Amino acid sequence: MRKQLLRSLTLALTVSTLVGTTSAFAADCRATKSVKDSAASVSANTAAGGHVSIHVKGNKTEAGKSQFQSEADYKSAWTAWVNYTGPKGPTPKVCGGGGGTMMDCVPADLVGLGTNKGYVCQEVDKNGMCTKGYNFTPSKVAFRYAKNDKGVWILNTAYPSANDSCA
Image (cartoon, rainbow, N blue to C red; front, side, top):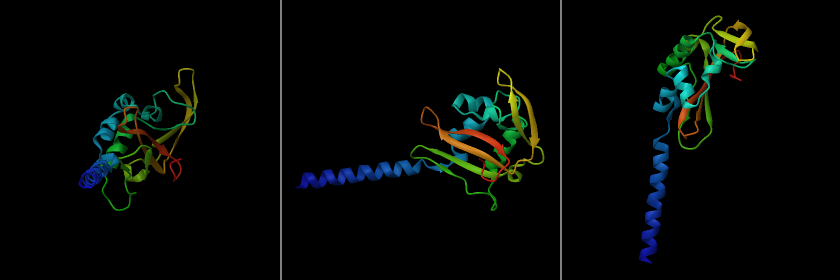
């Protein structure tokens, strides 16, 4: 009887520790070191397994993709979102525990993307380079987080959006 009680107590403590450990790693996605590292530049994002590059003008892309006008615009928007603490923005998503994806859909003016700061690629050549497109004024910016193939949370992609749902 005593051994069974001891086993039950040990099991309960183990489960409690594991549950506590999982939630201890949950954090605001944009503040997570692995996300910040993957968002530092387009090349760092690609190396981490993300695909921000297709949403930055001048990089290989696909027809129909919305893009930042430059890597500087992307980095500026990301930095503004990472540093934002004001009351009018969305509540930042939490990454941790299980898998899945998360998205922060942020007002474009909150992260400094104004008039004609977005671009939509309409046509690409055989090398995936955009050959025709148009400028637009984004209403939102999407920052999408996911676990990469190593099980680490990263900024999977980011893009300016013309609609309020970041679709």
